[in-house]
Image 1: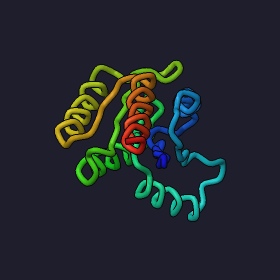
Image 2: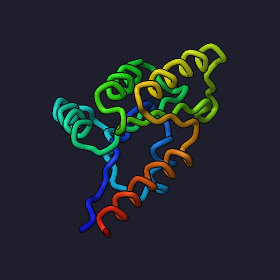
Image 3: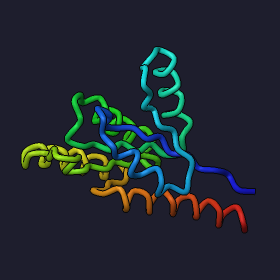
Length: 143
């Protein structure tokens, strides 16, 4: 019996296309919290999905306007370190993080890693990591 793994796709919104780049590479199920019209029901569903998904991915790009995703990834890396994944993309379209922003985000990544989470700097490695987790699950269920 195979148990399907699922990843929460948190992080930068603001018309960033990172989710559209990652989703075709995923072999596991996912929850995409981005919707055209954000309602209180959408917020409730996002909170529920963060709790029930096997992994919480937070991809941070230069399109980030707020800092709540940073708080979420640090919080999750403390509460569920084996399930927390951070990806910092230096570029998003024509936008690029500054040297100082990257230095600060590097410190966030070190914090997430020291708590037991996983950190990446590209979507290919994120997909590889998450897809390997699906395969680990499949192998365990086959034995």
